[in-house]
View 1 (cartoon, rainbow, N blue to C red):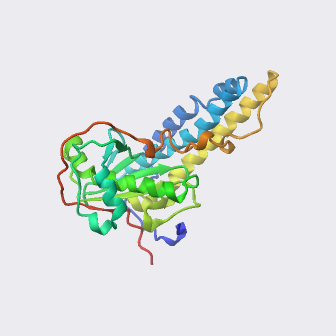
View 2: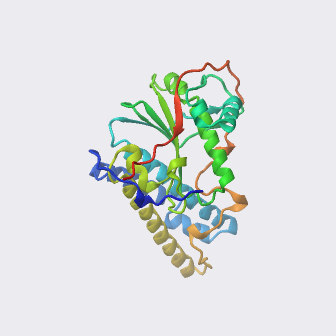
View 3: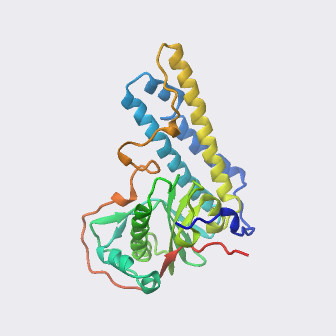
Length: 303
């Protein structure tokens, strides 16, 4: 994979900013819900006093919650731009075998003017974390957010991107029929990773720091990175208190940290579900072609 340094992209100044009190209130409320629920001192103390399976569940939950936080943050910051329509629900897109074959056997330039009827249902589906539609340009971004793409090998990333592009071929018809006739003339796919170790701007793998360009909001990536760090700090503080409480009660606390625990059975720690596992069984009518443009998200202009 070609690695792109995040500093190489020019960051223009946008008229919208993520530096606003209302957004911070939204973030803090969501963060409180995540941390003070299953990652509270009480929950962690109970896990420490329980079985190894209890600890395993806690250690696997922490990265999943962090992934949810990143997804929520991207959507919340994107809503700072009034030109954007941010969709996060009811987005189970059919992945047709015909669409997958087209994506696998052709360059994007050969099928970027084709779309399928969303009424057709296949055996596979793809559920994006977000769809962000710029209502001025009628460009829709299909977004998959990850804590890290480091756990993905090249083959899995390729399979994920193929499914995203195949789903993108039905997205215009899907949005028109299922979301109040939203009009789309171009679809782009992008994986956003909060881990700086792998980025490939030209091929649709972006770092969180490039989010500003994608949604045209200054400070978007920096704000979500700060939120992510706050989450980790609060979980770490609760973990320390839980260990102290367990030690005082005579329990034997583990010295491992939640983020250092390896997921079981090769599970992806970034999501509650693996987007490559989505399936559906409904079969509908024949697809109808429409004109559409499909490709990866466009990289920021370099100077």
